[in-house]
Structure formats: structure tokens, C-alpha cells
Amino acid sequence: MFVQDKWLRPYGGDVIAIVFVYYLLRSFLNIASNKLAFAALAVGFMIELAQYFNIVQLLQIQHIKWLRILIGNSFSWADLLCYVLGYLLIRYVIPQRYK
Image (cartoon, rainbow, N blue to C red; front, top):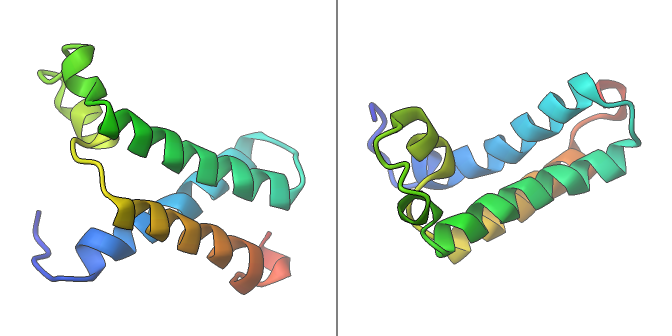
């Protein structure tokens, strides 16, 4: 909303979202980090799939602003690539001591 750039908002946010989902899951589940990283990637892919099928309109929940923002409303192949980059960041870049 406040950032009007061509990279950070559209792509960086999607990469960071997968890292956020990973650490959210990690705070509740005691599962191997590689499985949690894959679960975070799966969550991102499921949300993107929901966008592809226009789930917000199908469920008629467009009036629930926070849910509409969480799910999003436009499918993008680039988002899937960003989710994969977030997964790779979790698996190979983030130091092991923070996992």
C-alpha cells in the first residue's frame, strides 16, 4: 500500500511470506526443518491455486477484507517462482543455528 516499487512489494513479499509461514509453523510444530520448509511451500502453492480458481468469489467472502487480503485475488506464475525462492532461502541460505 505504501511501497510503490517494481521488485520489493510484488516479489520480495512473496519470498518473505514463505519464510514467515515456515517460522509460524516451526513455532507450533516439532518437525524436521526440511519437512516444515516443504509444508510452507505447499501452503504458498495452495493459496496461489485458490487464487487461480477465484476462491474469494466462489465462497462469496469478498466483504471480509482481512481474508480477501490474506488469500489475494490474482494468480501469478511469478508468485510460484518467488515461493520456490523462499523455500530455497529456508533450506540453503538461512544459517542452521536459526533453524
